[in-house]
Amino acid sequence: MRRTTPWWKTGLGLVLTALMLFPVYWMVNVSFTPDEDMRKSPPDWFPVHGTLDGYRAVLGQQLPYLGTSLLVGLGTVALTLAIAAPAGYSLAKLRPAGAGVVNFVLLVAQMIPGIIMAMGFYAIYLNLGMLNTLPGLVVADATIAVPFGVLIYQAFMSAIPEEMTQAATVDGAGPLRSFWSIILPVSRNASITVGLFAFLWAWSDFVFASTLNGGGSLRPITLGIYQYIGNNNQQWNAIMATAVVASVPAAVLLVVAQRYIATGVTSGAVKD
Amino acid sequence: MNTATQTAPRDRGASTPTPSRARPGHRRAGGGTGRWAAWAFLLPLAAYLLAFYAYPLYRNLDLSLRDYTVRSFVQGDAPFIGLTNFRQVVGDPTFVPALTHTVVFTAASLVCQFGIGMALAVFFHQHFRLSATLRALFLVPWLLPLIVSASTWSWMLNSEAGVVNALLRSLGFGSVNWLTSPDWSLVSVIIANVWIGIPFNLVLLYSGLQGIPPQIYEAAALDGTTGWQRFWRLTFPLLRPVSAITLLLGLVYTLKVFDIIWIMTKGGPADSSTTLATWSYQLGFGSLLPQFGPGAAVGNLLIVAAVAFGLVYIRVQRRQGGTA
Image (cartoon, rainbow over all chains, first blue to last red; front, top):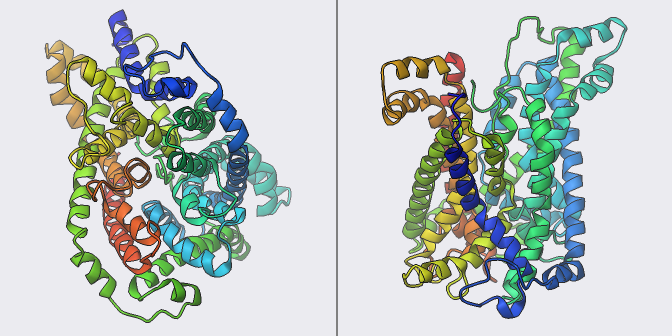
């Protein structure tokens, strides 16, 4: 089947991809559209009379939100890696009794709707005074990525040959040294994969942000967009410009992570 | 093939890679120190799961069984009222529409995502020039923050200035009030959700197709079957295990979709696109007078549904893991 590659298939593929990505193009197009053309019918299909007003508004109003999102994302990555890497090591290499139960709990944990977690977190944070705090949002956002991270680390680390750690054990290294100076460096690609997704999910989170940080000054970019929609319904170029900026991590992930995704993970949801 | 990360579904991780257990050469941590070390490394995870999964869930259950007001919410002395919140929620005039919309939203999203995803997977499996690049580009909707996708679709579906209506008008159709008419709001959020869900279905089904040995097709080609027959008689049955996993994962994730609907329509107009997830949020956070108890009760009903299907998923996956 590989031998016949007619051009019409590439053509059809291009058309389908263009259709699929049209909303993304439209977001970019609207982000450059001047206010006065926004409600023109038919709309301008290309940003020929483009303006940068939308992006000026982003720079002027949304920078603090972007900063918050960046901090929350990085914090979530750090917390996720700190919890998931040792746990993955334990489950993959030290194999405690009860590992099966832990795996089962991790799978079930991923099924729980975020909105329900958010309500429980809200009740707890209200009593602890942790609403509208960065650590509060980081801890909540990490619940999205921790189970995934443990499973990825576990899959990756169980593929590391036993001989590598055995040599170190002969030299008198304990589990901590083996983990820190052998397993962890070898698992670099797993770390990058887990970190990238933890960042992306924390950056994209709307549920936790709107329930736990909705009222304060420490709002992430997702809420920045949301409040834009609520407040100034007219400035869609600014809203879409913010959306474009908020999409940058996803674009970076797609370009950068393709490499790490391929090498980072050894088994998937689908066994083949 | 390395699919786990690519297939990690949207919000809540979970491509659930099954770790290959019991490799020859692996020893269980036998002696004293080994076992302690194993648990020491697990300790952060265990503490985290207890504090930030189990405890919020417990608080949520507690919320649904007590009569909370804003005051008692802060002071924590709300009286225990058993299942009253659940009874109130089930008797609420919003309950039946919310349940119906959840079922329609989930079923329609699944059918469309799966159908389109399958067609695209079969198409991209033909390895034409640029197919790998184009397939990667199809991932974009899945990687975008939901608020970005949802607000883009809101503007595209805007009644007066939206590009979709502009297109309809230029084709000679009338405008549709996508988001502001009760007849169309559910359709609109389904369209947006299908768009977001296609990549996930495409990736999973594509990796399933890669697992089918090409020899099977070569034998079929000798027998002179057409492409259409080949799909229905060979590809589709062979993909059944992967399809089951894809649909079940999709089911669990679609049940809890909240962001898209809330951002596009807030469940409106007049509850016409309210699902259990948005209703739960509406009760707890959507108004000035929060009803945490009923909100948590709706949420707990949703958990039961999601975890029930989740357990089916785990069962199916275990069974396939055993035979594959």
